[in-house]
Structure formats: C-alpha cells, structure tokens
Length: 190
Image 1 (cartoon, one colour):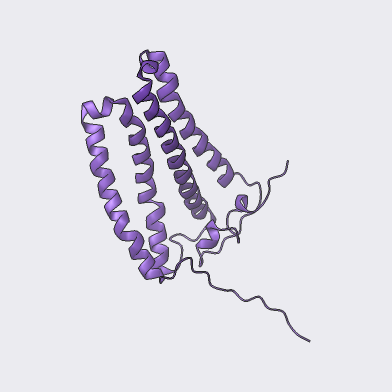
Image 2 (cartoon, one colour):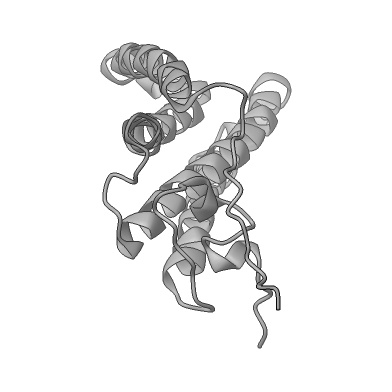
C-alpha cells in the first residue's frame, strides 16, 4: 500500500534570495519616500503650484503612492528579511491585500484619468472656464475614481463572499491564485 503525499514546493518569484529581494525593495523605497515628500512639499506649500489644475491629480497620485510606500512595501521587506508576516492574523492580511490591490488600481486609474485630463487642459481649456464645468470635468472624475476603487476593494476584501486561506510563512500565497484572498480564485455567485 502506498501513501500519497503532497510535497510543498517552495515558490520563488525571482532568482534572488529573500535578503537580496528585501534590499532591492528597500533602497528604491527609501528614495521614493524622500522624493514623494520633496515633491508633495513643493506642490502643497507653493500656492501657484497648488492652485494649478494640472497638479491636482499628480498630488492625489503621489499621496496614494506615499501610503503604499509606507505600508505595503515595508511589510513586504519585513517578510523578506524574517520569512514571516509582520502580524500573522487574517485582519492584517486583508488590510495588506486591500492596501496593495487598491493602491495599485487607484494609481493606474488615476494615471489614466490624468492623461485624459492633461489632454483636456492643453487642447480644450475652454471646457474648464466655468465653475460648474470645472467641477464636472476636473473634480468629479477624480473623486468618483477614488471612491469607486476604495469602496470596490473594501467590499471584495472585507465582505465575506467566500472563505480565505492564509499561509503566513509564504506571503506570496496571500496574494496569489494558490490560496489567499478568495476573490482571486472563486467566482462569486448570486
């Protein structure tokens, strides 16, 4: 009689060791944080830059990236240095997944809107001459994108449509299709 066993094959997304991966995240993350602080300082404290419509979306994107740089990336660096999650519990994992996915989607959608808005500001500046048009063309789309993405990922991560699987010793499983958050692998049925 033979017994079937499942071997746990360790997964490595790169050819580098976890320590080298941690330093590859750490050094650019430190540079990104200081650069974000520098640029946000100038955009927020210089009145002319702060009031320019073309800088508003950049400020929102930088702020979103700054939050990700201070949360998700350090948690990943900690994992690479220690081999375990910073706080091995389901709530922390869901918060980590939420911040990671929401910030990525938010930055992508805001950047896409920024390119459209830049086109409007350069070639169709007459569309923004009245306050009403400025609200509908400039402020409302950014607000809708921000609310949509944050609420969408809050719903997916924190409303239990299915049961999540956590393996804190292998953080890639929290974010992958081989376990982790169930909305990545399961269909939500009505």
